[in-house]
Image 1 (cartoon, helix red, strand yellow):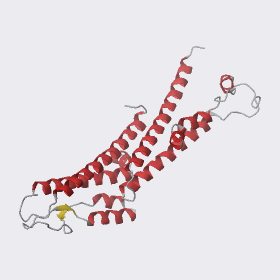
Image 2 (cartoon, helix red, strand yellow):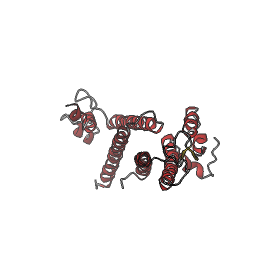
Image 3 (cartoon, each protein chain N blue to C red):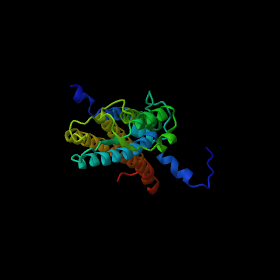
Image 4 (tube, rainbow over the protein chains, first blue to last red):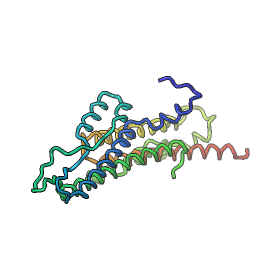
Length: 137
Length: 116
């Protein structure tokens, strides 16, 4: 990649190019999106005919294939979206496919993932700051 | 046993590599730069190579941590705690390195300020 010296973003951008950092920030977006989906599912647990929504399952496979191809910029450009969960079956006569206990379980799981990803991000940034300033804090 | 053995092996490894840790004549060597080389038999490792080793040890730790984290992020492993521990270890090792550098530079500046 051409990098003219007078073009200042070239000096700043590479700081945040670590694959783990980019991957974690992308997955953090997805984690937030999933939280919205779960919140919507819980809110609509009594709505007749409501079908539970979730992050589209093709996101994970697409992200994995792009990363394995070694194209990190393509991987970060990938956008997750919410779709109706076709695997969820309705257990109730009103056609609602939300199971509240499984939603709560998913929410907890998502929270752990979110905490872990924020830890990865903040650790990366702390390390960079330490490397730049040469002192802790 | 294995649990206790794994704690604190990082600092001790560094300390053992430091010249003078085993009561060698390292300080006098440094204070007398005009002393003929090889007077004390096996010359202690110079600070440059010690620091070099430290840097590569820190680098190895960083790589290990990022490999484990990568596995977790990609969903190949669900050992979140291993990743967090590896990241913390790498962070502390890095901090140790930076702090050592700071102290060395500080002591150099102290020496330069000393009236002769």
